[in-house]
Image (tube, rainbow, N blue to C red; front, side):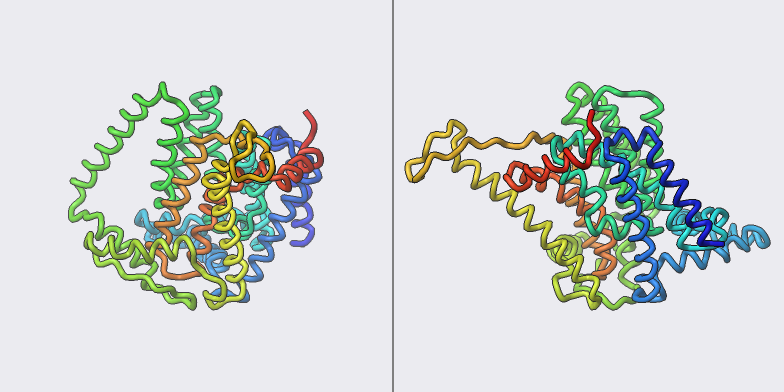
Length: 430
């Protein structure tokens, strides 16, 4: 019966992908859309198998799935215990995925693979939203926009029923809403949707929401100079409210709070622990932890470390991303000055060099990407001492680190040809 149900839901999702105007407006050809969705679903199914076989106690996916039966029983037969298990914000936030599994179980008749399929559809909509943003912000560059779907870390960690999938979906809808408002398509409904997406991001991972705030503020202030006075007023009001809240909270101390966040991960047991000093609640400990936090958050796991074969794939991916960053920086800082836009030969140049044509970059959005990714990766390295958890929590940030630098390389001849080929074969004609 579950096989028939899986096929039925697959057909329904496929029909919706082909027919929904929101997806069709991406201009991706229907066949390719179906292939991308199938890849997303089958990666999620493979992730479930890998988690069951290799993760300690089968990982969070299976743990949340099994707990969903217990919570459903308590909701129906022991409501007092159910309320007791959700008596604080911490419990309600941590149980969010269990609640999602409970809802999906109604439609799947308690089958994790079908839950994964159903979960993949709204996440795929978020992918489409982010793809549409990248298509506008990194014009004529399908390679960078396609990384939204195909970056290995993104694909692996957002295709299963993890927080990363929900966060990725919400970020896609949030950025699309902000992009539309910046480009003149402002409506109150879109503003409310964007606020709702941000609040949900805060619910599922407050640290990611806090890294989004300054990045979004800088982006909006650069894109909309006329709105800067209003933005500064909003920022001042929010800062004043935050300061007032801190003063009213008894015993609040920022280093101590950060130390408590780190302790939640520090006391866990795992097979991929990395060297990381423990925060002791002082400002001095925050300064001491910065170098290892940068190293862990930006560069770990190194090839051969981590203790699991699968970490090697993520190490290679990370090495490739930093190679692209380095090449883009070298091209900007060394290659461009060596070529004069007039095409006149340099005194030591044996041949006439062609003029440099820089790609059209939306600088404010690139600054948003870098600020969001670098601050997020720093926090990941500061709080998490396990290579496996770092790979997962950092996955979404890697896309935003990669995108501006990959787009900066799109003027190279191989990428130009590849982008032209993709435009002909992957997109519908206008």
